[in-house]
Length: 198
Image (cartoon, rainbow, N blue to C red; front, side):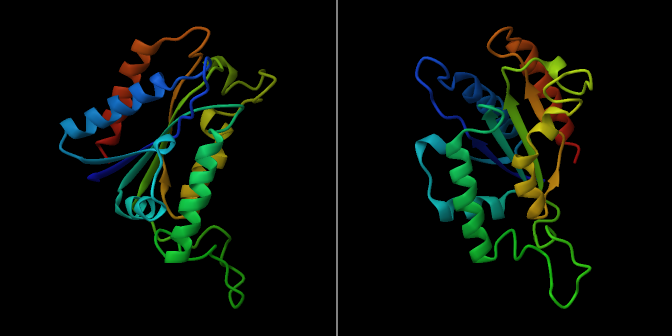
């Protein structure tokens, strides 16, 4: 694993979400990998992008990390637009994914097995207003025992569909009411160190 793509999916909301925290996490991830002689490319969706360039970055990368806030239990809408444009173009170009996997002549082929990105890895890094105790606990009303990764399966499944291995994500919790950013940076660094062992 040597080529890293970091996608910053933040969308600015004046007076509510300026993007500084996600920018900081993106910078921490970028610096970490560059200091270890990985080749790093970045995309900040809000600054604009070229669809074909993004397809080529996905084709080039060994590891893709999406750095995103969670707005209303999803990524910002500009990220959904990005996914639709980039992945549809990749499918048309036969890069990272060829088909949905099914074959009329072979009914044993499963939906979601037409990706050609085996060996590539994907990880999400997110910022939540939700507290950590809202997850992995069946007594909690909202997520009912689901992990933060499971709550955002709509994000990771795009990459699984293309053949990527989905890695456990990094999540920064309670960032509005009770932020623990410096501790989160330590946890993030520890998580990134784990990734270098792949």
